[in-house]
Length: 234
Image 1 (tube, rainbow, N blue to C red):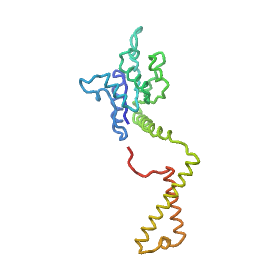
Image 2: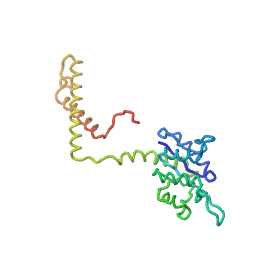
Image 3: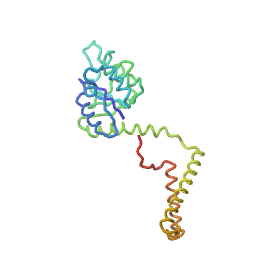
Image 4: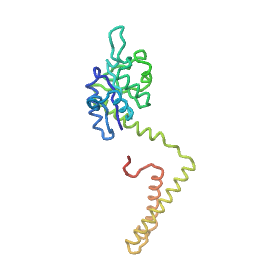
């Protein structure tokens, strides 16, 4: 998973750097984009931001008390300027349909609708999380859990509900698999014991019946996906 951190340096650079360090320690996060560390000298800034956002799975928008770039009375706030990089980052994330999570720093409020340009209004519809100095470790755990479980939840949500035909097919598949497993066990025990039957080795029909039930249960559980074999997945 790739994370893009959007923030205003004059507003939250210290908290953002601290959060980036913590996120980089998580094994399931492949990269954390932070402009001061991820953009090389001489590299075109707007183009690099757009390419990084295109690669990101999640955009965290860190919002402190000065995030909108408030200005003097009568002047336009920086967030409403067309060339404001924070506005460009968030607008691009929303346009691309990225998962955008507002992160409110130290009890900072969400900006109001009239404080934002129109292209950032959808940000107000996103559920926000908190990142506070006094509970930083706990808040990072909550934030990390929300980021990492979003991917798993998305995959689970896409699973189809089983139809009666699908259930019957899985039951039959489990039976076939159980028969094959029992045949393999029987052949192995026959050759390794010098010709003794599996029933004899298990002490009678009761032992054989328990083995059959155990194998059937395991195979049905596997075919219905209730447990998974420990193979690596990309």
